[in-house]
Amino acid sequence: MYIPELDEKRLDELRLEKELRSSLQQDCFYVDYQPKIHSVTKKMIGVEALARWIHPQKGVIPPSVFIPIAEKYGLINELEERVFKKICEHIKEWSDRLEFPFRVSVNISQLHFAHKNLYQFIKDTLTEFDIDARYLELEITESVMIMDDKYVIDQFSRIKQLGIEISMDDFGTGYSSLNYINKLPIDRIKIDKSFIDEIVTDQKFRSIIKTIVTMADYLELDVIAEGVEKEEQLTFLTSIDCFKIQGYFYSPPVQKEQISSFIYKQFKIA
Ligand code: C2E
Ligand code: CA
Ligand code: CA
Image (tube, rainbow, N blue to C red; front, side, top):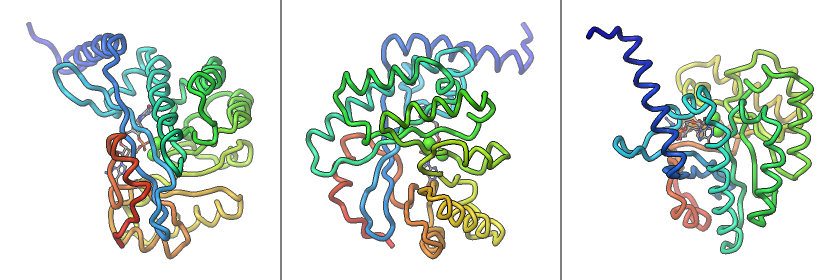
């Protein structure tokens, strides 16, 4: 039987959705962590938690594939709740064992962020794992602003009241208004990799990044650059006082077990 390409894609997607559902029941997920480094002290200042799916046949599947499917088929809340609990378990372990606890950031989908249960879920999970909220940070993308203003502001404020920090992820790529920066209690902006990629080749991008860092400074927001891969990018970022760095230059995402060694490691690179 002839199947047009579109149907083929749709079938693939439906197959993945089915497999994602059963993987949720069997808990086939784990979390990697990518260090965030201060480029002057070379110390690890935090980590970003990144979810991975171990597919029974296909092996590890990246979040860029399964998160959109989870969002489309109503599985995102359940998936992120599971991932969040795993992360809290790790935070508890780190904060009990290690001398220098650090902040762990967790990506939350805009759909999950909109859900009224999120606040209570986070509050209950902090209690369940007995962890201090100051070890946690949420990373939310600008797309959250397509929702109702008042609801988003309330949700941000409630979560902030727990003592959790909030970062604006992929900054500069989404929502076209900067108005939300004034309205929302954000702690930090993450300059998107697409800007960092152009540092070496494009003066205009260097100017944009410098403007973002200056704006963050005036607004008393913390700023971190993500997707930093090259020494030239790091040199430029340091020259404009952007010292917090995440990217392959220092480290790709690594397994949880490797994180404790980063705490004591002084990065010798650069
Ligand atoms: P993100 O939040 O922008 O996370 C950074 C992504 O960039 C990660 O990809 C990381 O591995 C990659 N990356 C970091 N440094 C570099 C670099 O120097 N060069 C390059 N080429 N890539 C770098 P990953 O792990 O595949 O995650 C992709 C996206 O999936 C994340 O983008 C995040 O938006 C999303 N994601 C991961 N876990 C979750 C989750 O639990 N919930 C939600 N909603 N999204 C998640
Ligand atoms: Ca992120
Ligand atoms: Ca990002």
